[in-house]
Image (cartoon, rainbow, N blue to C red; front, side):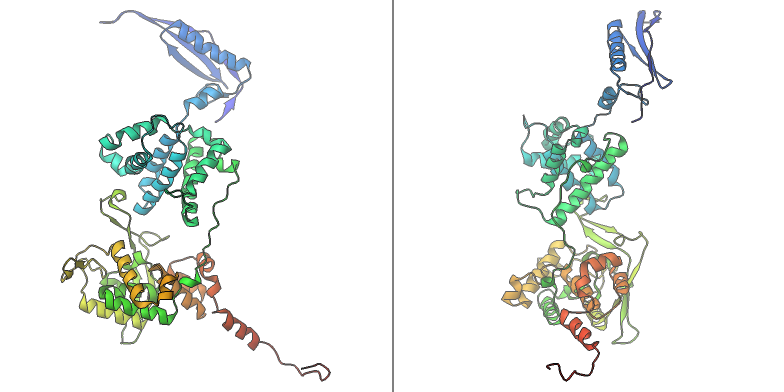
Length: 478
């Protein structure tokens, strides 16, 4: 906000309008003033209202208050004119981000803003139940797709939406350290009141920070409120948990277990373990993306052009539960080529022979139903639930009781960690591993640094091998 103390307030100007057809004669009163040479005016129906407003301007001038050069109003009045509630601001931020955000990120934005909004209520008086407030925020206020499809919220959400619109703090209140700290503390808790995971807190804090930065951009905040407090999120470690990474024998056992329990997913998990694909990248894999080796026993290639993420039908533009998107942190048309070792090629060949690609060419699609394996595959990608169920069965079948109780390969994503860790332990260039994995070198090193050049024992052997030998001093005890 640009301000000035160069203010002039003029006399009230009376304006008389003669009677027009169907209307009586009338008089209006216009208050005129100038700020930094720019003239402003406001018209009132009665002289009393005009004199009251003019008196406010003169009082502000006499008290030495700065005037906003854009609106011409004293600074307190100008700020009040631009006041916006946190609820209205959060809705505006959702609308700003919606068109360019993936379905999953839209859901993440809503989850973060819900937690903050519930912490920034000004009262509990006549408040609907918290479960209803959450439903209203997540199912309407912070979902632009649903608001665009209907003029009014559903009847079951209308009361909660109306209450929220009038009972959150003004955005400027977030400059109070106590208020901003209250909002940040809310991000650190789950719905059940327990501490949230460090990665969840970091993600929600980043979204909240973006919403506040937008407030600075729009002029509703004079500064970013995070500058006012010293609040630290839980420490986030990016390094892979070694206990979760399988060795070659364990990985072999797990893939054999998949072959026994859910055979149509052996090749899917194989792409994670042998090529380091992300699960969502493997779901996008089509027959045309698989470059077969020229000779049996040679390496092939997987040419990745995107990913399929599952976020829920409420967050996609098409109303589907899944969404196709480009490769992570890449341009929409980017393609990443990943080498496929011979054993993965053998798994893919067996898979394609037994379960031909879907009509759209995809390799890993829904094939099971109440009657077992479908003969004809649909175009629907594997669901997150189907993948989790298959992996749970594989762990229960392929691991020992002690391994099953440990973090070992608890998530399918841990197979990707095993692949990249193994490549680095074999001395493969981090730049090359990062390129195949679709990571930056910085991210790769922050996650897998302890795997480079192998295990500690191998590193110590290499150090010892480099020691030079010198003649022994006969006077020195051996």
